[in-house]
Image (tube, rainbow, N blue to C red):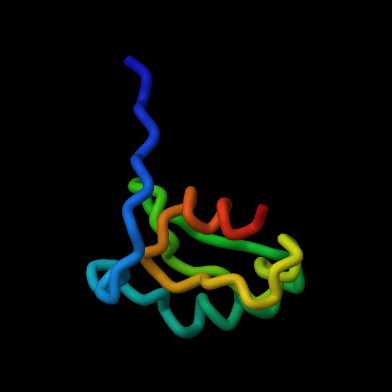
Length: 78
């Protein structure tokens, strides 16, 4: 059985309400890596992205709010 990719949902003010925050110690480690990194859940919603992630995609003002769909973030990068 193949997995159907999730459909991009429109951004909403409460988009990240059910995304649990990343542990602060883990966030500090991820942010200090110096390489672009983003973590997504099984529904392809953003959990955490470090500052270098936006730089990696040439978008310093990239919206990396928890809960954003991977497809929406990718669309903002192109």
